[in-house]
Length: 148
Image 1: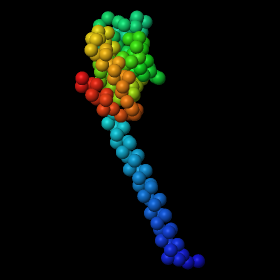
Image 2: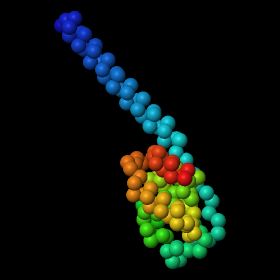
Image 3: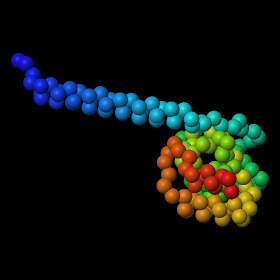
Image 4: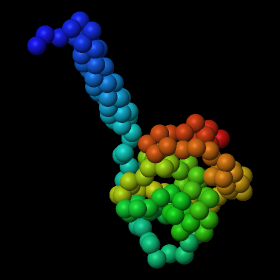
């Protein structure tokens, strides 16, 4: 049975659409993969001793090794008794944390105890007014906070 010209054109067009969709998916995945390779997942070596049984606020600074399921929010609550102070931990560890929403088990974080009032206020303001965030992407508001 022979296809009519119209049937052939419809078949040919639907085939082109399928190929175009596959091409779009391929391009999308390649962009996602190339952006994932830009994320810095390295971390600084730990120095000194880490104590997990210390009181919430310690002298000078301490180190915290991230465990599975932890976030800057709950680490901040543990050490500063205030989860809205997570931007302080982010600021002091910006060289090892690319995205504040994405930390990894085994990362070693510096927890500073001596926080001036200005940084304290700016951190809380940033945490409460940060805006929309996406995991794996460094938001513009976070970049501005790091530069302050």
